[in-house]
Image 1 (cartoon, rainbow, N blue to C red):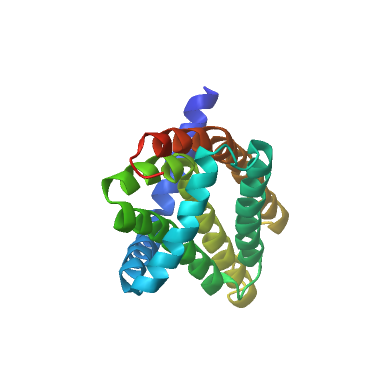
Image 2: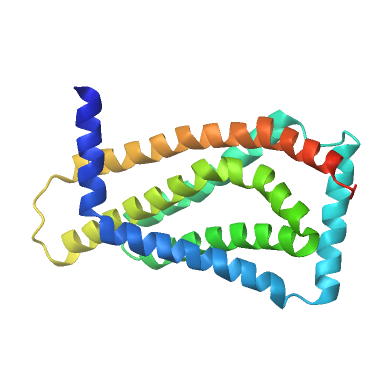
Length: 215
């Protein structure tokens, strides 16, 4: 019964905000495409410099000098939690809506640039490497960012309506409580994504690098 109730709530939510989800997903994909395009706009020397630092990192991985998994877990969790937290705070403010959209676009751009650079420099090996190093945790992180962006946008719009239209009579505290619980749920899921990045992706990446002709 509870499972069916949650499914109905989720279905109603996605149905009610379907247009916002479409807009947010398109904006994120535009960021991914832009990030991939930026790779091609880099000069040869810039690509060489970036690939040199990447080679140093790969060399450290194969020599057992990778970052401690616990440290990487905390870094990933703190980074993504701060990013999500900033979006959450901006959702409360009336003027934060444009910044939320910019942050989402930047997140997509980072993903697109990372994958695009690896593929550009290493071809199929780069695609395989990005598949094990970037995609596993982002299967969780990207949906969280998209859902959180939708929640912050809709909450910000509700705040604007309350401020200027004066027609919304729904209590503010229950709305704020639901909004806060969304943040808590996002951080819990980000904990799982950070664990994947720290304890799984790094192991897979080391195995892939060790099997490549490049070392």
